[in-house]
Amino acid sequence: MKYLAEHYNYWVAIFLMMVGLYPVIAKTNLVKKIIGLSIFQTGIFLFFVTIGKVKEGTASVLFNRTDVPWDKWDPAKYTNSIPTALILTGIVVSVATMAVALALAVNLKRAYGTIEQDEIDQADADDSQ
Amino acid sequence: MFNEFFVPIDLCLLALIVVLAVAVVQARNLLAASMLMSIYSLLMAAIWKNMDSLDVSFTEAAVGAGVSTVLLIGSLVQVGLEEKPRKGVHPAGLAAVVLAGGALLYGTIDMPGFGDPASPANANPVSIGYIRQDVEKVPDVGGHYKDFKQHHDYFHEHVPNMITSVIVSYRGYDTMYETTVIFIAGVSMILMLRGRRKTT
Amino acid sequence: MSENLILRVASKYMVPFMLVFGLYIIFHGDLSPGGGFQGGVAIASGFIFYGMVYGKPAMQKILPRGVTDALIAIGVLMYAGTGFYCLLAGYRFLDYTAISPSDPAGGEAWGMTLVEYGVGITVSMVMVTCYNEITEGTLPEEASK
Image 1: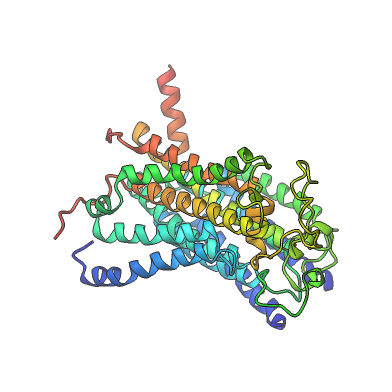
Image 2: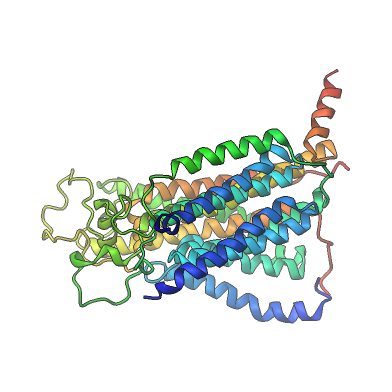
């Protein structure tokens, strides 16, 4: 029971990753694949931030604590700052790459008239004959 | 402090997230899928707040529930709103996903429990040093700092927001390249979409 | 969308607050949760909201294409320029004590400020550019009524 209470977050993160990976493999609509990748990314972020959480901790911002000198700060009272710093820039970069992927989908629609992957493959096969 | 509420809130939010993720994947109307993605991002922002990562919560709320939804709907207008109907489940895809998920779950069997202050990620001297902001930088090569009084802490004044000090000062080089990646994304949007006439 | 009275009035009240709040998040990045990335996206949300309600011509009037294109590059230039200035002054790359050698804490503060501004400018202008390019040709062109 204690094991379950300490690990369920990891399992939910892995479940989210797999739910996001399925449309990339199985669905044919390109925008659906891009949405699936976005869900995959949030699963990874959840996994990372879970590693950095500390049970009795609070946010990693120090408000006006002048009574304790700096080398006595108790790290068990603050959330680990490294995973948060990594994920922060990761989220903005993820939306930028999603925008580029959507621009590619729009250009494909203008070139082929459709964004279903099997129809695009069919059009390419017809062209190469 | 408020940690007796952590587990119930966490469970409710995670249950909603899981249901929403499956609903997004199942939705055939892509406009409905993007609306559900917006709600999904807002709930993820609440989860980040629950995990005490406020910076990530700000970013996810502004980016996911704001800009990302606008971009998705803007592209759906040009691309088409309905997905072609498929029947049934793709068996190879499902098998691949189940195998990958099983392998990942097997990998988390002996991971330390989350929230433990003594786990290797949290008890690392570098992590503790970033919180106390007294990580030793690379040794003094040019001899510029030998005139300064040697404090125990490297900076005279610490920055209250530890995460900004990590991103901008200790790991400023990485943030520079992240900004360059965002710049490249902006430039490629301009190159791909500006000035092209619609052929349909 | 500018025929809709509710949207017009609400946006006139909301857009200034959104922009000022975005600037607040950037400026107080050192003292409270925030920083360049979050503030940049908040500022971009303000501009995108204005552009959605009032249409493309109004958005072009306040943020022309040349200005957004130039500002994307100027943000990255501010960041890398700070690093190169520190390099040329004899210290290491992005070693902020080069900015005021007699007082390293002040140099750190200056360096972090400049760098955060650069990041905020680039991120906000890239989001506005993404919005402009993706919705090109989809919103009805409206004369200002």
